[in-house]
Image (cartoon, rainbow, N blue to C red; front, top):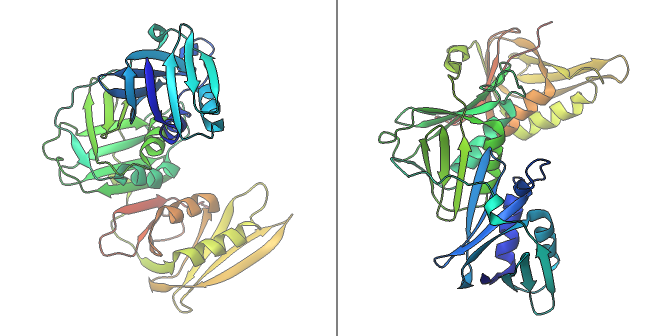
Length: 369
């Protein structure tokens, strides 16, 4: 095997795979990447047995071949190289890396020890515009449960409604839902899929910088996200996702529109007074004063409050939240103006953008005292 390519292409590819190819006591091959030069293409593969990724990297192939190399040392060597072009040549035990100023040899393992990454046949895929899936996961991932008991809640849910694709997460205390409009929804075989949260994070990281359209398809309890240069396959959770729509209120007594950044500034300031053992802050919405008072009190730290100008319709409400969860939801809305919908001190708050047809919502339960 002999390959000529630009250092930046190789370095960027290895960086994408660095979260997946990690050391494993029983399977050292999982800390390696499989480099394959075949049919004029260079492919670099990594897997952790939960997620498998294959990257197609621009390169000039002089001689075909295959080799498995520990990613950590390969990435470190490539990062330290100052030359623009690199030549990779397979030798008996590993790979040689040659540039104008650098010559190194890295020992590898047998490519036969590298786990097989299944290649599924693409049938009736959902086509997603660039960056839509990464943005959707970024918005809903804060609401994923951290639980080994409920793998369905420690996941991201994809629901195909034929007219749109819903990306959902919930931990039972909060909920995020993102709506994506896309082609091929009515023709796709996908109805609903539960993707482990770790896989969802890898999808977000791997595809975040791509401007290529994505095809999504499912087969044999596995899901594939594929673009022109990236192929990612993940297992899916077998089971039924909770009917989350039942917990979203249909009517609200109070509607508040507020500047997102001003609200976050107020919450962050007042959170300093919520105490070391508590994350509670109180929100008091006053229609008469057209303002929101954010406050907190701690016997150890002290107390503080801040008033924020808001547009409010409906009844006054006083409600307590975990400020970290509240900031997560507000930050997940990408627009500058947010709308907050409430009923009373014991009912969830619904947060979304102030657009006419928002495509994201965040539901957060209050702390009842």
